[in-house]
Image (tube, rainbow, N blue to C red; front, side, top):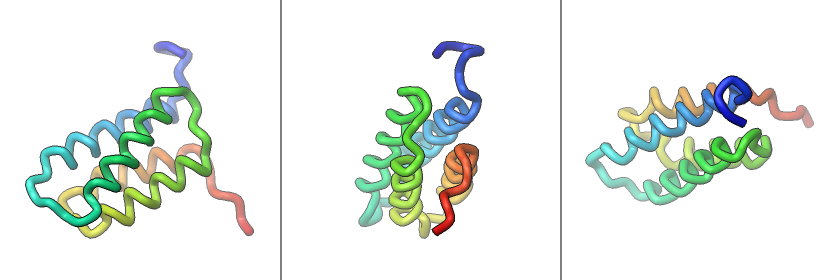
Length: 95
């Protein structure tokens, strides 16, 4: 897909992930799960670059990112934007 053919949810996800990746790269403090966050953000970026992502995988990556950087307050706004972008793909099924 290109330009106007692109799913706006995917565009929002790509923008939010890109922003959080930049914020994480600029964050000067190392923390134990930084590598996990970087890997999962790369996976999210790849999913957003490949069209409509697989929703269970998208949610799994979000959980891993949130778990790995959730305590880093400087990244909270970027993480919230990624979470909002993932939520655009719908609610998880109720069990």
